[in-house]
Every structure is written in C-alpha cells, then in structure tokens.
Image 1 (tube, rainbow, N blue to C red):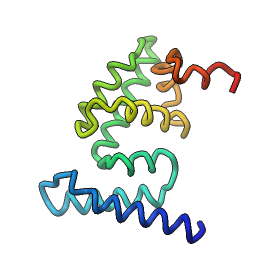
Image 2 (image 1 turned 120 degrees about the horizontal axis):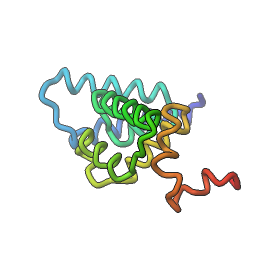
Image 3 (image 1 turned 180 degrees about the horizontal axis):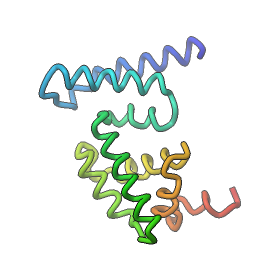
Image 4 (image 1 turned 120 degrees about the vertical axis):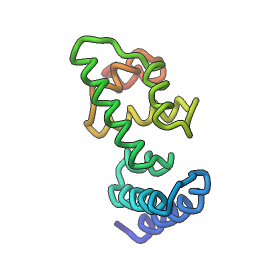
Length: 140
C-alpha cells in the first residue's frame, strides 16, 4: 500500500476516533474494544470493513447483523419471502444509532453480497427495486 493510501487510512482512523464522541461507552474496556475493532477494520480494508468503519458499527452490532443475515438465509432456504422493510426494521433494532437510514441497510446487504457472503439475501431484498434492477438485468 502506498504512502498516500496509508496516510488516508490513518487520517480516517484519527477522524473516526475524534468522532467517537457520538458513541457512548459504559466503560473504558468498551471504548478500547471499539477502537481495536476499528483498527482491525482498517487493516481488513475491503468494502464491508470500510462501511462498518464509516458508520461506526461496533463489533457486537456486527456480530448481531451477521446472525440476522444467517436467519435471512435460513428463511430463503425454507422458501420464505423476505422483505426490505422488515430487513430495515430489524437492522434499526440492531443499530439504533442509524434508525431511519435505509441507505445504511441497503449498503450493508450489498456489501455482504459483493463480498460473496449471504449472496442470496441482497437480491431477495432488492432485485425488484428500480434502484438496483440494473445489477440483475444482465445488461451491466
């Protein structure tokens, strides 16, 4: 990784640390865990980790999102239909700091899809949406 990219990542990390005032921690251990998780996200440096970093998602929230994605996969495997509105409501319960931010919900589902994780969930939720139809039309 070049100096510029490394510098930008470190700058993002420092800005993220400064902006952590939005997050409230019950203990210094929670704050350290949050910082360490964010540091790992910087090292991972993929679309999903950058998304989690930008939205200040905690490791616990991330684990709960993954558990929810597993439950959606199970529903799909059982032939059940899943709905974007229900998905978004459940994500808001997991990450209340982003309540009402449906873009975040879309981005998280898409990031998992693009990284090959829970790849059946994003299309099940959004393939009929005019916004994302082009991704599934075969014309891209």
